[in-house]
Amino acid sequence: MSAEVCPMDVLLTVRKLFQEVGWAESQGDQRFQTTSAGRFAKGMDVVVSFPAAYGDAWGELVRISELLGPAGFAATGHWFPEDAEGYGIHDYDAAGKCHCHHLYGKQQDWGCRWYTMTQNKIRLAHQKGCNLIFVTKIDGSIGATQRQESSFLASQGMRVRIVAMDEFAVEMTAKQYGLADDARQIFDMNPSDKIDFLGSSDKGFELANVAIVSYPGVHGHGWNQLTKGSLKEGSMIATSCVFLPTEASPGYGEHAAHQESGQGFFLHRDGCHCDHLYPYPQYRTRPKWGCRWFEMWMDRTRVAHHHCCLIVVTKQDGSLGKSQEGEVAFLERENMAYERVKISEFALMILMGK
Image (cartoon, rainbow, N blue to C red; front, top):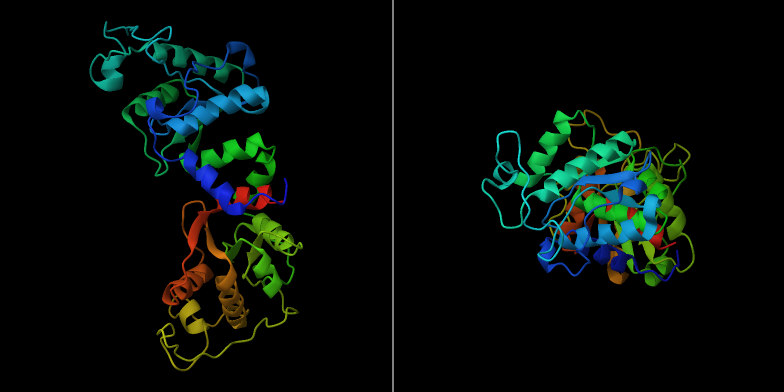
């Protein structure tokens, strides 16, 4: 990827995909019925259920499916415009009612032929050994139609991978640019390299567009990518994060005394930063790595604030690590504006900026 790619542009582009836009209002090509039967192959990623609220993302899925073929995604779903073959046709179950009744509660003008066709394609994808993907809304919820699709999958004993829309939008974009494997490594929880890192230089912040000021340490591969990338001359991503992994690291095991700030950030006039970072009784003793790192981090973060958009990277569920809670508390008490970015979004920002 070119170093000219702006990380914030990447973020805005992928976030547009999981804005709720009805299929009829979407700007994408919606005249997509299904992946042809001959294209299903073992190991292929196949979307078997998709939330109708995300029309732009559906259009992007259609485009990538047609662009990349077997290397991209396939889909079993159907969406029929009024002039499409199959629109308005109804198929009936053993009780003599059309599928509209259990899908929507009553018969609908657009019919339910799409549902029969979808079921047939899901069976075929399963028989071919495809990886079945069930996409939910961002909050994990599904609509009435998806509940019926879920019931069908369960009745057939088919296992699926459940993915929320925001994460799936990142997966689509990563796959389009050949970054899917690298992005998946960043999503995973894994240890980082034990290399000292004291934050970007002043010049690094001056040249960057964004600064990562808080990062969840459980995603070690992403941390490695961030620290290595931020050290490159002209990098658009800098970071104020500090990592002192071993006793040989400068500042490891040291404690930094503090006083109450003018903004009232610190609650005690005596003691070290462990008081608010690792408070009793959650922590019975002060951590062996100390809190000098936090003083270093504050210094780097103040410099970053003068030059960059500040980014807090969260875990995929939006939660923070314990040390991150202290970092975010500082940002908010110092009135430093920042953007929260999930680890999946961060993966694209860091990989596409290479």
